[in-house]
Image (cartoon, rainbow, N blue to C red; front, side):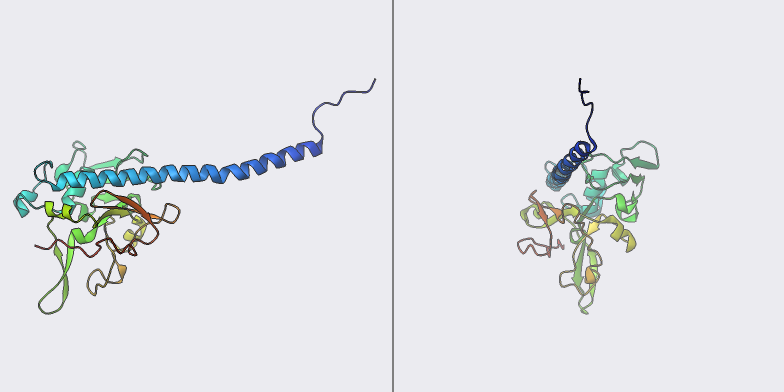
Length: 253
């Protein structure tokens, strides 16, 4: 009686492995694309939520507390930094108990974190945002339009200078002004800058010149997400090239 063949031959095994490797090679890019699309959606949703909160904060009729801004600027004006601190729970908005240093773990559900940004974020008590309340810079996901906080003006002698800007509900009538975007905190750190504030040079000859404060991140398939004041979120490879966006808007009082 002929003996029955058990198992696979070497050739059959090699063919099977080759077919499986081919299928995996086809599926992996697709799965990777799905994961990236999911992270991109989460990032866009976070930016959209921030823009929505900004609209609420800017309206004195429906917004919540503004820290000590009413004493500084009057009831109808506020600082962009105050809004940012209210989002993170920093400075006068501290909501993390009596600890002087709190670590915010990385989480895909964090409304202030892009899922592509790794690492824990440390927050310091009684420290304003611009003095290093958020560290390390590489763990900061989003940067706000710096010109909404520091306007560049020209003095009578022709010298450009930075002046603190004051926002009011009137900013909501400027829907095309960029509010917040993906940033590369490591670049900001290498320049000794607070990663929470970012703005392009445009035609500046003063402090904003040479794109010193410009460090957008293109971590989503080469795109950078940005939210405008109207709440719309866009994924663009070149944010400055968007001619309909009011990058040069500055609230000066």
